[in-house]
Length: 315
Image (cartoon, rainbow, N blue to C red; front, top):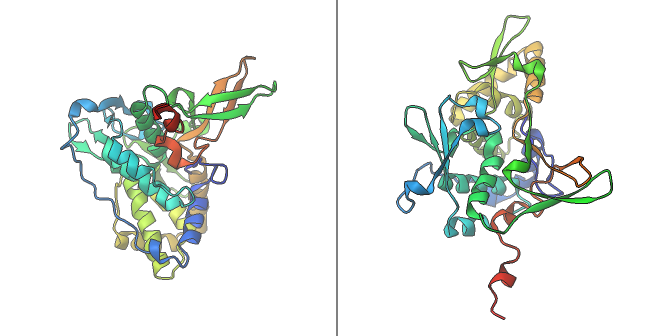
């Protein structure tokens, strides 16, 4: 399960709810019937390698799912990228994800232990928001802080700055830890029926392929199987993409699955929560207060300075 936190109307949205909302928005809307495709190309023509900062994958919420020794390289956003991102439609889930993907495409690279360079598509989907906030921190290193507010039990209002040190990520429960498989970088489960399943949060690339599938199905007036879309990406833990034909083949396998297998996988995926859970900070009284609002002004406000007019106007 990948929890998504946005504005007041969009907070705490599960992947399944995201898909339902997405289908509702696409219903009868020709503009979204053909989803824009993101070309996965690494363009360094105007960006020097020195502008990238390297981060160990262990720093990320999904760090345990990457090859040991991998590095995620991130740079600050340039003006052209901020301009493009600022046009995101806060009411359209698909547009939010696509604009974030475009920002990640421009500012993030993935370096494998053997030195090969990948893209944001190789990264895990629950790390998407964490990466976006890291880009924001690098872009606005002086000023332009973004905060959310929370009320402590003592009555004080606490302002929590939205930055990495205040993020709290989902932790793996003790019950699940013993099933972590370090050799495959996933969770390996064996059921009483002797079935073996390998599960991990899907990569951004794989999740995008399934989102494109949703768009195509809706354009052809077919309602996608939401249970299938919720579970199957976790099974394809080692994939960065899948063809539309491949998805249809997996759907056929899914519909033929016996009930015990479905019940187990559905329950297992529900337990696999990763990514940012909340933001937290200590109140002056000593208690920790937290909020699940990581987009208090909507995703579009992440790279926009609300005080720009006052800062730059000549009196």
